[in-house]
Image (cartoon, rainbow, N blue to C red; front, side, top):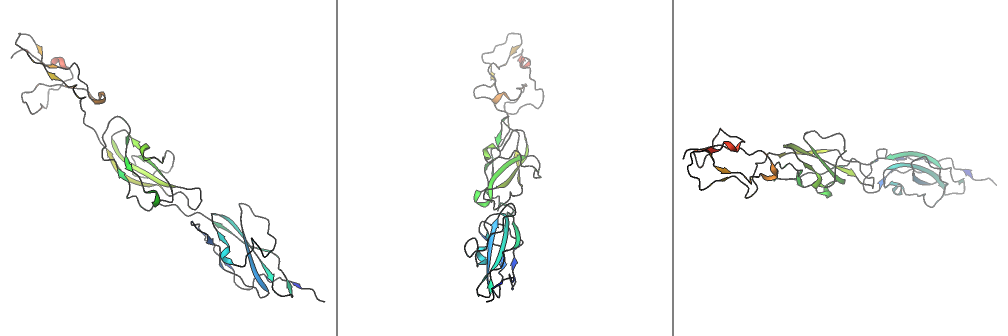
Amino acid sequence: KASPVNNTVYVDGPLTFDDTAINTPKSQDLITTGGTSSEGDVYYAVIRSTTEPTTPSASTSAPWTKTTADIVADVPGDYYIYTYTHHTTNNYTDSDVKFEKKITVNPKDGYIKDTSDITPNTNLGYTGNPIQLITQGIDPTKATGVLYYSSGTSSTAPTSKDGFVTDIEDVTQTAVADYYIYYYAKASTNGYYNDSSIGVYGPISLGKSQITFVEGKVPTAKSGLTYSGSDQALIDVTNVQTTDNIGVVKYAFGDNGTTAPTSGWTEDVSTIIKTNA
């Protein structure tokens, strides 16, 4: 009695693979066209591994399958695909397991759909303290990862992601200048996407502020003055104080009750005196 012949015909028909697989948040087919065998059923197995795995033993149960749609990538990584032909007649035994191909599935590039939700702070003026530049950031549903922000004076995106923060309240500047907001979406741990590129929004101007006086702490005119023949101070500056003690207070004589003089200003209040009526 003759023994069955080892099935050396692994795959008669075409067997093609997706060599350009890029991961998406769903399973992705790795075999584009399944193989056929005139001597049996073609079975497939796939193993995801960071190193070359041990060749699996032939079986008609998992991880082996006759359905190519089951050979998928669900996360980025290296996938090793194997086949063998399972005999369907008594003329042949099962073929040996054959390693077919290693496919590396890469994450997709991250992206941000749009930046229309960014809202600049409209109440910007120098105070000497850090000021928040934006009051609203990008809608998180429009990005492929966690949103990070930074700011600077260059209209060109930085090459480093150092110093970026997730909280827009921490995106602040102090000095008077035009600023740009830098942003990107950091890849989440599911591995579907890489970090997005760094984008630029702006400019946002942080301008100079007008110096003001603390309420009730302004120069006041002295009252009840009468001619004495000697110089007399015309104003009282005992409690003068600007907001945050910014700037230097200057004084000048004038002869118009509504328009300030354009010259003659001095920090020395002792010169603001008068002898004659």
